[in-house]
Every structure is written in structure tokens, then in C-alpha cells.
Image (cartoon, rainbow, N blue to C red; front, side):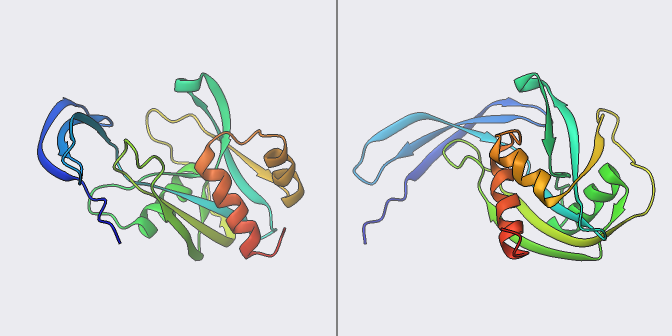
Length: 182
């Protein structure tokens, strides 16, 4: 089988900030073709949870996403902190964003949201039997509303294209398949 791996000769950071890092790589393809610069965007890994309450309601969050200037319906979740494992981050993010506590967490899959230019991974989980423990504990720049949906309502939102976060759509279908709700 042909080796398609590129050889990395050098990297140079062209922009660095808390949530956005861009680097320019000097690469060589297997046939000797040089690509310079090849821009790579470094983002933190994140996690999301398909959160099912003890009443079999799907717990979703609504928040404004400035890049597309739209309020979206999404799975709870967020950035995995440095030295934090994805499972702990998922449990922490769900509690912070929704007030729900997770007792049963299962990895659905890990994916690279945009492997052509981004170096990060997203971890998607299914949590069932979640219980409301208390209020949200949001970060300074979060303004999130928690909403409960039935299975049927989520399927309708998916059918109508109202869940806009592309990689989260797959997680919802994977969870529904796993739960035999399709």
C-alpha cells in the first residue's frame, strides 16, 4: 500500500492567542512536491454529550454563535482543559452548562472535525439517566439556556435542519441508533 504521509521540514507560528493558533508548515509530499506554506489551525480538543434525563428527555442548550450570527440548539459540552481527560471534561461541562449530573457515560466516538486544516479532536458521549442537581454554573462569557426535548422533537429538528453544528448531528444519530430510537 502506498505511503501518503507528508514529511514535515519545519513549522513557524504566525499567530498565537488563547483559543486560536495558526502555524505555517513547510511540507514535502511523497512525490517530492513542496507545499509551503500549509496552514494548520491549532484548536483545543472538546467534548459534547447527548444527555438523556431520567425521564428520557434530551437535554440541549441554546446559545448565540457570533461567527454565524445565530442562536443555535446544541449538545452540552465544551473545551477539554489541559491535563484533563475527555470523560471528566464531559461530566464537568454538563454540570456547568445544565445543572445535570451524569452517572452513566459511554463514548460514542472520537472524530477530527476538520482534519484538512484543524489539529483538534472532538469526543462525543451518550449519558442516560441524568438527574438535575442544581443551577447552571456558567463561565464569564457563556449565556446558555437549557431546553428539554422529546425524542420526536429532536428527530423533527434534525429533519428540518435546525441543529446547525454539523458534527453534533452525527452524535445525535449515533446515540439514537445505540438507544434503538430510530
